[in-house]
Image 1 (tube, rainbow, N blue to C red):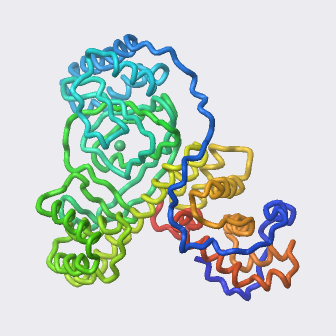
Image 2: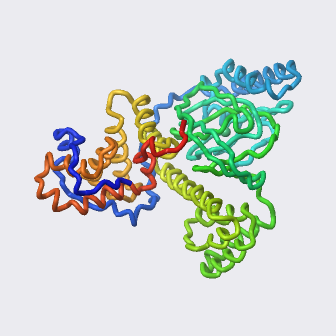
Image 3: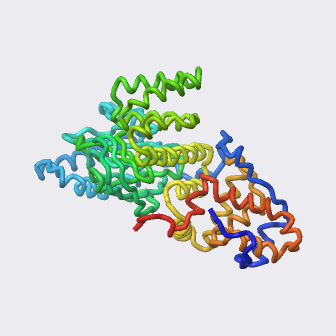
Length: 468
Ligand SMILES: [Fe+2]
């Protein structure tokens, strides 16, 4: 947050004509009302019209192509004696050769699914797609299509290898590194998660999937639907960690009893009698291992419950730094869920792209670079402010975004100080009027910098440790 002394003389950071256009005659300074800054369950926005060209559905051709892809890969891998190290390259090559995005989409695959007599046993759990559809089962590998409507993948690694391609729609694909510094147990690691890159994947793009930390990634699907085709081995080599910034790796499949049922009982108790929950959870956490602390903390935060002081027993037992690291990870997780819920109400791919950047890209400089790359022709900062204005207009943000607030945000994107904001407004608004509203303007400035939704956009690259 900007700490510059309010009395400091600022510099104008926007052209007066541009500022006047933004204000459009409105000099109303209002709080964004952060106390209501929850994500509203607004109806889905209309978004862009569906421009998908209707394809003639030929289920028999899809069946033949699935068999061709699967049988060809099975043969190629057998020739390499099923060497796991060879599989990602073979899978990538097979997907490039098949170019399945030219004919396969949600409609053609559904038509095949409804009519084929050769639908294989379904492998993936229902939550790994909306839905996942197993297309082919080979020796030591299988092929599946994953339909995504709203889903976003957590930052994760894989316990298998293979390759995937985009069949329909597009996704923001982000890659990360993780430096482990403190291993609690196999299921919970502390370290530093670093963002490496983000790029848009489009139909026909193919990526290899490597096991372990060699390939840590996330996908934020931009269109409704997005469909990916995954060729993957069954191999289970170590935990398939999920990662949480700034630095936790946790095994999402580690869900032992009796912790599992204890968490469910605690959730029920919290709904029935929050005070009894607090006493019971505090008693559990006073003796608990760190994995249990993580799970209780995560479950409590994800259901939006607030229990100040709950972690004190854990802090005494495990030390402040470790517990604070869990707390920081959970705070990021809650922000991730809020943006994911917001996306469920938003269909416009450009708005989804903006949300994807806010969620995945760590600072303003990188966000604006990616906007400029994907949408050339307009200043990326102007584009970002326009998108925020359009999303706010749907009511989904539950925030009061006035032209003054947008102009203030636009100035923040120019690395302005609060004094700069005052000086810029004084170009077009009589100085006395700006002074009159100075404290409210300061509140708007602070609210913009305090909004979790915009935290990446208002973050300096220089403030981020160890990005490169
Ligand atoms: Fe993945």
